[in-house]
Amino acid sequence: MQHDELWIGTMLEGKARWVAVRTTDTVEEARKRHGLSPVAAAALGRLMTGTLILASSLKGDESITLRLLGDGPLQGVVSVGNALGEVRGYTREPWVDLPLKPSGKLDVAAAVGTGELAVSRSLQNGEVYTGMVPLVSGEIAEDLVHYLLTSEQIPSAMLLGVLVEKDYHVAGAGGFLLQPLPGATEEDIQVLEGLLGQLKVGISELVAESQGMDELIANLVGRLSYQVLERRSVGFSCTCSKAKLSDSLISLGKQEIESLLTDGTAEMICHFCNERYLFDKEDLEALRESVGN
Ligand code: ZN
Image 1: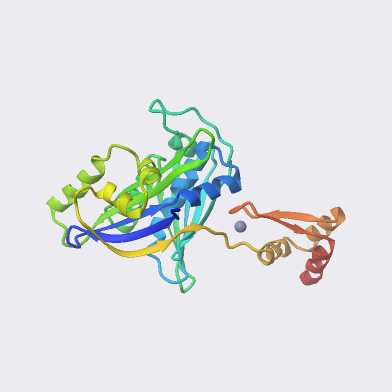
Image 2: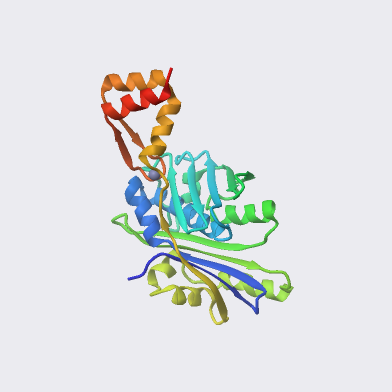
């Protein structure tokens, strides 16, 4: 059985870099955890996949947060990833339903709307750098390419896709990034541009049809040879815990905890993974004590 993986490599004798990722299980887990509609699964799935691709160049415990701040019915989509290949995310309105586009595809751009993309990198020294660009299409891959070009001066081509079946389960999801490296000639760049243009089906269909990463990458790069530099597992993973949610309850203050105590219990839900944490009377009393006066 296949698992989600991210592979990094080069081609054109080291004059181009690529990142390929299969995220079928990751996006299916997000869909089940949040009860996502097909268009919400496509939007969050594409963003989580793009997050893993951008996170693949991070080091140590660095992380990256991508926020789609659009005025569409999803009311924002957020995804956080790290160098370990872990990603989590959510959308404010997981049940959004929209008519399909005339092409029969899910209308991710309409669900996202117009607005901005914010990309925040948390570095190992604790500093956070945020870059903001306007959304150019709301289809997400184009928006990330625009971000890479304008904020980081890196020209790239990117594919992101999520294939949702009629029964709502995710049959295939993944992404592909191509970047020319220093030394690439005009001719090399034309070869790279031609590669993605010649694909007959979307990346999500290619992921669904491929038996493994080798087959997926071969389908993407055609007859060209490529080198694999690194392989890593990726997956949905949240960093929440009862202790962390206790801290956010404490930050609400003593009065708020006392009002929760009048109900006897409190339930906290993690936005990112929809995990529920129950705080009973004893828990709440302990929190009230820890707040002090
Ligand atoms: Zn969580």
